[in-house]
Image (cartoon, rainbow, N blue to C red; front, top):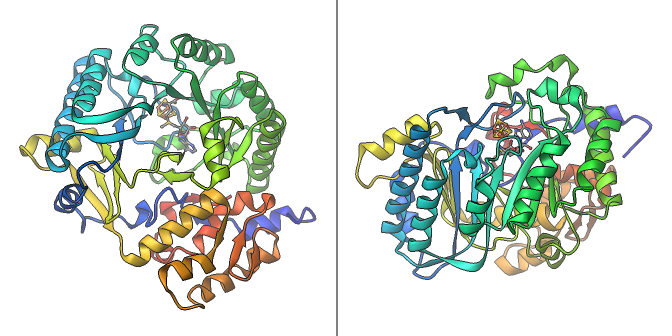
Length: 456
Ligand SMILES: C[S@@+](CC[C@H](N)C(=O)[O-])C[C@H]1O[C@@H](n2cnc3c(N)ncnc32)[C@H](O)[C@@H]1O
Ligand code: SF4
């Protein structure tokens, strides 16, 4: 990057962009797609085809002010158990459409904080899954955990239910930042949580960090990254704080006047990157890091990494079934999303005996599928040979002429290298991966910019 005037350069790249966890992105979802489409796309899954499962729990023990997720505190254990019963009912309706016995190699629980479910109900949902799907013996079975609130009896239950991975939120260890975010979490709490999980054999640990939060500094995020790397997680996800107060009003409760500017965010990202690489982690795509011997690193090196709503994954399944409020499902034909709030989700499940709680989505055209594949390879491999794509799909030689022209300014800034029709993103272009992907996004102009967070 042009260090002479980084602020001017970043200003040119400061547009709001999707994170491309799908294409088309969620900004294109409308109610023109609904439960009938979901039903048809589930019916089209052939017997024996692998599927992945994602289960969403929109509850937390306390709310963090920075959090962009749709989540709430639900004190009543009975109400949380009732939600788990809805998950079981939705699973029953899904299985009625796709049939039993589909192999599952990836099963993820996310939120919110799924460990807010009473253990008995988590057990019931897992039993339903295991009796309806063929969960493979080495399936990646993971759960998101808030280290401040993991009940002491939970890790043993997770092991008993076959969980082998956990993802823990940390964000930043500086008390001043934590105070600004309303999330007080000592390093000791994080360490104790990792120990509890590892003692139960849940060996694979991911940790989430965030840069760009109020009061964060370059030195502070470097200290956080170094201290967290010393806990030896297998993977890390390093997110740029997404400031979306139009969607999450609680973000305004933070001292937003103390948010770092784009140049400071950029420097913080670079400092975390350097600290994690120095500690032996391998950067993966836009925002992940893994130990070099981790499955994710192997997949990244062999071109078999994938990207879905949970970020980067080694999951090759073409069909992802999301269960629970706001959960998104992905099919070759399109994407669907369930009712967003848990109340609306409960109403839809309760209203009929067999209707799916889907409220919106998008169909994929053949062009969307082609572009989805290009964007996924760019986000995962940081390279693509458009000549190969053209050859494979029997397209005219100059099919991507406009896109290659549109990459000129990224090429001039050294963020993408173009040789014939081959694109390669060098290390210095990594923070601008989304800008390269956006060139292939036919729908971006029709997105409302406020649907996305800052691209740097
Ligand atoms: C769905 S949360 C679940 C984690 C778990 N509940 C916890 O707090 O430990 C997953 C991650 O999303 C990230 N996240 C949430 N809000 C964000 C925002 N506004 N910008 C960037 N990342 C965010 C945080 O890193 C968080 O750990
Ligand atoms: S970061 Fe985790 S605990 Fe905090 S509000 Fe978001 S989902 Fe809940």
